[in-house]
Length: 290
Image (tube, rainbow, N blue to C red; front, side, top):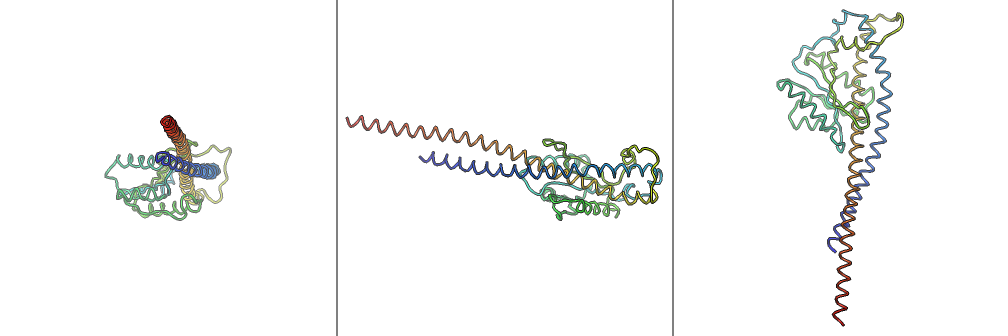
């Protein structure tokens, strides 16, 4: 009977785990839809401001070279904004991100890098390997990120770049492509490449009247353009995290269900063996009394 009791306890434990993973899957699905809607709704604004900045860049032409955000930094180090997760149980989300980071680091081992970090998992990974973390963003946390919070992070990166400490600023995040595909992606945030701005210009019909002058508009829109890029990267990162967590919890729920079925088969077989043995003992005892 000891084996039956043990199997009964294991079946109950696996059933409890299955309930937990199913609940986490439902929560992840709900939050995924919310973050996905946020990512989709931010794209029209991002496209419009990118197109406008590209148009102004074409109008200014050679005058773009005077802007400090479009010139290479004077420092020797690189600043990296790394967007990881605050929590685990999201499958290979963080592992894929860190693998992408290590591949980049191995391209030039002598490169000096300072990290600006979103996500405690990313912070723990860097500190464990004694990487230099210049700043950990915790307010707001990534799950509650809004445009204002992303603008603060973007402003911190701009100020660090303009201080002369860094030659450039890059962002490593997980781009959300579909419910089952999310790819760790690098983007070069600073310096802004004028060629990239011109490539983003949209075709506009007729002449466009600009008020005030193009230079003033460009200088005012450039920080917002950077804020938007950072915001989109962070929103896609949290969307990818919950997509990965949903898939991971779904797989865990299915695995728990399969394990529960196997344990129940073993339990029924063991129980049947015990009943058969007891019947044989009773029959044997009755035959002995005859």
